[in-house]
Each structure stands twice: as structure tokens, then as C-alpha cells.
Image (cartoon, rainbow, N blue to C red; front, side, top):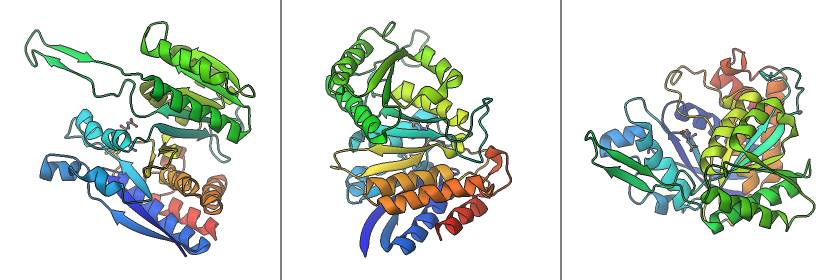
Length: 354
Ligand code: GGG
């Protein structure tokens, strides 16, 4: 029996509920495919912060490196400023483990309605590849005259040639593997951001020349935001900076029904470090503890984890079980217009796993 060590980082709010649901699905998949998952839960997050003044301990990355993969729920608490929770846990893990490709698929599944008119199941099927270690999220900047009337804040975006090259190359390789429209759309705002994003555009053209079989387009982010609503079915792989990828993947999530279905993989494609899998959504304190959080984004993220671990059969069984549970209506939680609970949606997925 193959064994895998999985770190569980449920974090805050509904993160607790959705990670527990995904764990149940992984256990069921393990039984079906003779896989053993050794789960190691970590209690890091906002409660840990209230006790220790930090979101996770100083040796957190060292401990995470011991696992084969990491499954995270959410970070964010109404009583802690969001920049403290995000910069205290999620961003240091992404940077520290060099998880440079944040892969966020958006598919309009059967049984799910898009808020856009006229889109059939499967007609929207795109992936946002978000640069995940630098760009606008680089922790570079500071305050001068902090909290005084003349205070100044400086925030610097960082674009390195290596950082652009590797994530853009990942996007081209992915477009090749998907074998669909074979299109990579690059998103910047290089008319206004005339250093970092001009470098990005130049690197994009250079890498594109290495992939003659893949079509390309370069869009400014404002046009791309319109096009995600106006013509979402025309996109295939979309590669963007840290901030733009974050925003566009939220638009992609909502045009395909709900952010409750949006899964995400933070990958070290070279597998030097364990990769991190998570739902795109946050901690949703307004519904936390009510048993109605949609677990499917985290379950789909767990399917991405199985695929990354090379367990393709188990990955497609979990992915297929989610699709079947949505198509039957059994997994439609309130965000999707249904009345399924976290528990009943999870049970429907597990039942489909056989
Ligand atoms: N699922 C993890 C989570 O809590 N995401 C919310 C969030 O603020 N994410 C910011 C980001 O992905 O950069």
C-alpha cells in the first residue's frame, strides 16, 4: 500500500469544516484505491495568533517540508487585520516553499448555473495561472512618519526575469498538456506599469517563440476583466501576475457558478518542496460553524493534490464524483441555490466514489 504524509492546515472559519470534509473524501478514495494517507493536523491560524502573537511557529516551513503535500482551508478573522493573517501564514508558505505557480481552474459544471445567460455545461473551461511568489504581493515597502499626519506608505511590486520566465513557461506547458484551445492569454497593465510589466510582456514574447504550436494573446487587465464576463468561453490558459491572477480568478469563479467551487493548487512544479492545495475562498466568518459551507472547492483541491502526487486514477475518481454530485443536484449548497449542507454534499461525493 502506498503511503502519503499530508499536512492539514484548516486555519480559520469555514476552513475547519471544508478541510474535514476533504479529509473524509481522501480517506474514502484511499480505501478504494489502496492508498494510505497519514494526516498531520496543524492548529496554526488566528486562534494560534491569539495565543502566541504569530499565525504559525518559526519552524513552520521546516515542519511542512517533511510532508508529501499540504491541504489548507482558509485564513482570516474578523478581529485581526487581513494583512496580518495573510502575511503571517499563507504568503510566507507560498514564498518559503517556492510554490511559484498558483493554478486555479474554472469550469462550468453540469447542474450549476452561470449568472451569465446562454452558457451550457462545459462551455467555460479555463485555468488561471497566477504568479505566486513576487509581483505586487512582494513584502517590499514601508511606512515613513507612521501614524503621523504626514505619513507616507511605499509599496513596491517586484518582477524578476526568472520569476516571469518560469510561471509563463508553466502556462505554456499546461496549455500543451490540456490539448484544448492551445491558447495562452497573458495579462498585464504594461501601459501604466512601465517597468515590471514591460519586462513581463517581453519575457512572454520570448517564451511564446519557444512554443510555435500554441496561440497567444496579450491583454491589459481592464480589458481582460471585461472579457472574462463578455467572452469567458474563449479563454484556455490565462497567465497573470500575483494580484491580477487573484482578481481574475475570482471573476472566473463567479461566472462558473460560485467561489465555493473554485479550487487552487500552489505548485512547486519541480517537486523540491511539498505543494499546497486550498480552496480559493476565504474563511467566511458569516457562515462559519453553520454547516452550510460548500466543501467542493476543497475537495476539488484535494483531487488536484492527488494528481500532483501522480495518483491520476484516484484524482479523476474524486473529480468525477464531485461532477456527478453536482449534476444530480445532491451537492448544491446554498451558494449554488440549493439546500445541501457541508455534510450532505460531502456524503454525496463519497457515495459516488463507490
Ligand atoms: N483559502 C485560503 C484563503 O483564506 N484565501 C483567502 C485569501 O485572502 N487569499 C489571498 C490569496 O490567495 O492571495
